[in-house]
Length: 58
Image 1 (spheres, one colour):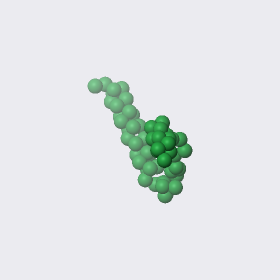
Image 2 (image 1 turned 90 degrees about the vertical axis):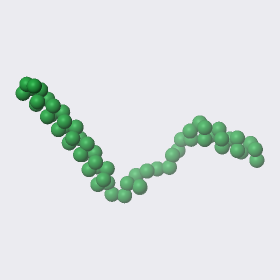
Image 3 (image 1 turned 90 degrees about the horizontal axis):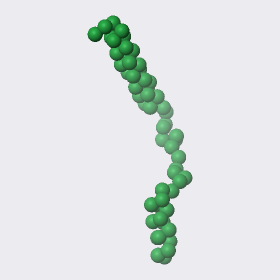
Image 4 (image 1 turned 135 degrees about the vertical axis):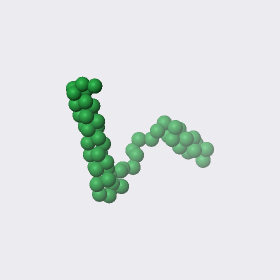
């Protein structure tokens, strides 16, 4: 393989490795990530339908 090919492979693999490392760092260094989640505010259609059917049966 030519020097340009090796350079392209090294840059591609190195870039992806750095990106994945940065992602892992961001995920594992976020303090108390459970506070960053919220309750869902949109009902899926099947949940809405089953809830409406449950109200009608009462």
